[in-house]
Amino acid sequence: MLTVLAFAVSGCKKDEGPSNYLQIGDSIIKISGGNIKYYGLYSQENSTYDFDIDLVSKDITLSTDDAGKPVYTGVGTRIYFETYSTEKAAPADGEYTYLDDGSYSNLTYDWCFYAKDYDWAHGSWTPNDIQTGTLTVEKIAGGYIIDFSGTDINEVPVKLHYKGTLNFYIQEQK
Image (cartoon, rainbow, N blue to C red; front, side, top):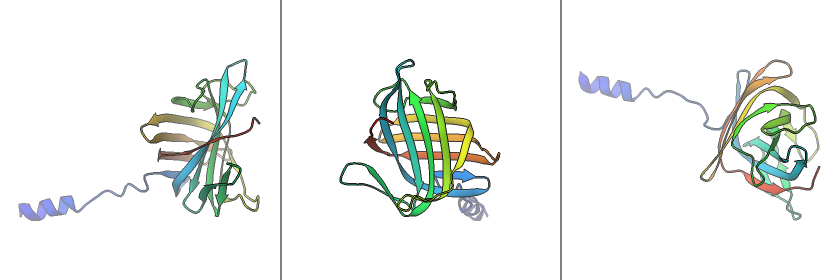
């Protein structure tokens, strides 16, 4: 009897879903990778640097063109954050909040969207803006942990969890 009970308990594993995911309402999309794009010093007044965090689903393949710029091949889901921090080499660890007042303050983001139909090659996609929520960034050995919880402009809940490596690109100033 004890053997059967031990087998029954060990056989019931909780389904935790994908480890890297974007949840939009009840829809869960597996996130497979991403990029950090560095645009340098953005606000001299606040001494903040611009880092764009860009994560994609498995339907989008990430690569680099001959000029060293990121390329997105395929059609899938993308979520994007334009962040600002006083750290120069990488996005600073911490909680980022939405602030679109043109100040580019430390630990803020001023543009965020997701698109379920992102098609970089044809320039077509329907952005869903996000203007509320908290983005958390933590550097770890071998990459980052990125979490987000908020709502889009239609008040649909949006959650994100990503743990892993990200490609790093130095971009031209915006």
